[in-house]
Structure formats: structure tokens, C-alpha cells
Image 1: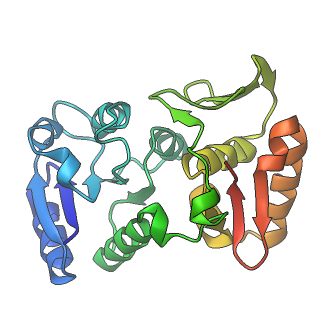
Image 2: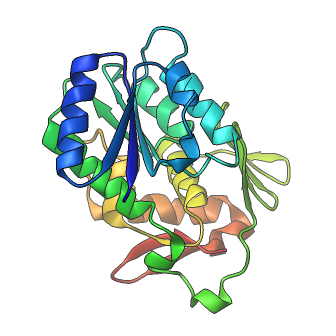
Amino acid sequence: MQRILIVDDEESICEILQFNLEVEGYEVEVAYSAEEALGKDIKSFSLILLDIMMGGMSGFKMAQMLKKDPATASIPIIFCTAKDTEDNKIAGLTLGADDYISKPFSVREVVARVKSVLRRCAPQAQQSPLKPQSDVPVSRTEMSGDSITYNGLRLDLLKHKCYIDGQEVQLTKKEMEIMILFLRNSGRVLSREEILHNVWSDEVVVLDRTIDVNITRLRKKIGEYGRYIVTRQGYGYGFDV
């Protein structure tokens, strides 16, 4: 059974989410602060619903700690918070959050987002691979709290900059977000819907052509690494390692 940890200092919200997620068949635990949550066996959870603004340690700080620890770095995090400005969303996603839900929210929406993230973050064998499993080499993508690297390609998550062999490559905001998404999910295909949800979630209407144009530009800008951005007709895009 998949286990979910809810971290929020509002007891009523915790109770509502816990009840509805348990109805869906999940095992749910609650913590009313980041400090209480960190006292639990975090690595035993399949997903964390995390508030940002809490007394004591913030949700951002807790997420940063979890992403720096190899034992918990792969656990998906959904921020559930009233802090819904664009900067806060970008900060949350940059820290490694898999989704961002603004309060007040619909419980049905939260349940749907939880299911979506759990599907997306399922073990590699359950995903549509870029290559037959026997041919997939060990990933050379390395992640830390403030950067993601693939050989000579490095994304600085604090400065929002891209470097190739130490030289800065000028990327737009959307191009940077696409690269972060690709490297965090290296080795599998991302559907157009996943890319739209993670990069253009705040836009009302985005054409498929917009994704294609941004990826075409990105391939050119990152030089030799552009060939690792692959297209799978009928599926989407991925970063092939």
C-alpha cells in the first residue's frame, strides 16, 4: 500500500485530506510541523503533501533537507499552500517539488494530483523507457541541493543559469524549466501533458507548437547535448542517457 505523509499546521485541513486519501486506499499519516514530520521514518512514504508556511521550520526548508539526503531525495513532494505567487511556485519546483497546489483547493483536485504524481514517479520499470531496459546505461545525471549536472552540462538551481563546460549558456525562463524537468526525469519519456503541467501550469492556453519551438531552440543552445533531447512520436520528449 502506498503511504502518504501530510505536513500542515492546520488540523482541519489535515483531517479532511487524510479522510479522503484513505477512502482512495492510501495509508496516510499526519504531522503538524516540519519538525514532527522529520521525526518520522520519511523514507517509508511514497509521497509528501507539504505546507510552506508553518510555525518553526518552513516547508521549503524541509523539502531542501529531504532533497539533499540520498535516502529521501526521490520521494515526490506536492506543496499545498496559500503562497501562490509565481516566484514561490518557481522556488518550490526548483527545490524539487513535483507539483504545487494553491489554497483554497478542491479536495478532488488534490486527490487527482496525488494520483498523477504517483503514476509519474512510479519505478522506472513501469514507465515507457527510451530504450529497452537491457540497453539503458547507468544514469550520469547527478543532483544536489542547488544544481543538476550531466557530464559538462550543469544547471545552477539557485541562480537559474545553465553552464556547459563552465561557460554560461543563455536560456529563457521556460527553456531553463524544461531542462530542469528533463534532467530530473532523465531516462524516460515525458508526455506533452506532463511538460505543459510542469512548465506552463499557470498559462490559460498553450499550443503544442509552443513546446516544439522551445525544445527546438533548446537543442540548438546546448550544443552537443542537444542530441540527448529525443522525440518519441505519439509519446513526447525525453532526455536520453
